[in-house]
Length: 427
Image (cartoon, rainbow, N blue to C red; front, side, top):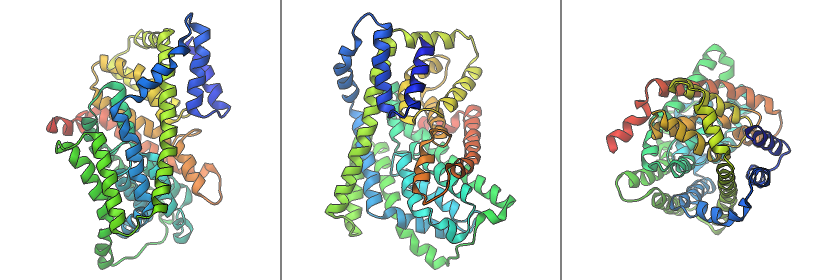
């Protein structure tokens, strides 16, 4: 049964059926094959239950927050400011790619939106300053992954819903690993450009006066971050309410900078609706598939197969890491989380792992899936922004950053307090 389900899933994804539809179709196939009851009749109830979760309201709000900041032009000015402050480092504007992605991640909970936003502004600079194209593109794809780790994060909300974990604690746990990963990405660029100085391109010269004048463009995303995260930890708002505050704050900033127009609002709402529809289709389809898998005994079979190995917690963690890295080569991140976490989390928590710590580890593994071929979503996003060239350059340039993620994972495994220190202080 496990083998049949896996083969069917790979076939459905392999013939280019959208992931949300593939998960739903897999459930429809498994039902008559292994169940004596018509489980599909529960589809309506399952769809209602999956949607009837207050925390999920935060998803369209965080998406709209990112859309408003993008349409209002804050991303371009933010990138320009980052380029003035970071371009002196070996690697030049590649550090601006990572820095801008980090800052934009603190206002948008989506990795795809982060990669697309920063990539649109940055890619024209490759030929202008003579950068090594693969490494430059890799820094964009990797920088975009920070969108699902640094709060506010849509994926951390999903993990909280699936495991009944505290989203505020997950947000706190993601701060140090998120910024440490951004720093490791920058170290990766520095090392590469020290070894091969020609990869770093021409220097972008700036005076201190220009740098200080540009700080005004970094203020809007920082203000939104403080508004969203600060309202949560001040006890003034739930994550969902904080997301609504963030949207309101973004609209006020857009109006202040004279960027709030009906055209901009329409485009932001349309983008929000498209992204939300895609995410919720995956949530609904994966919830239905999880119900089918549980009803036919597939979930229990998987759990018993894994626990029956009798492995120590350390070996089990290594297997889970390898499992997500391999699975990430074939599945989109959100669907991978929703289909696997109900199985993986109880096993790992039962072995003594902290659910908050586990959430950060899984998110980093999901981040790695965003930049591993053949279905690394950020690879496709960055490639789609280019005028020409093959996907090979994006894939090649992303590999050093996967190694940086592996280092952060190792650090988390050796020092769990790296993620748990802030939640413990503020609990």
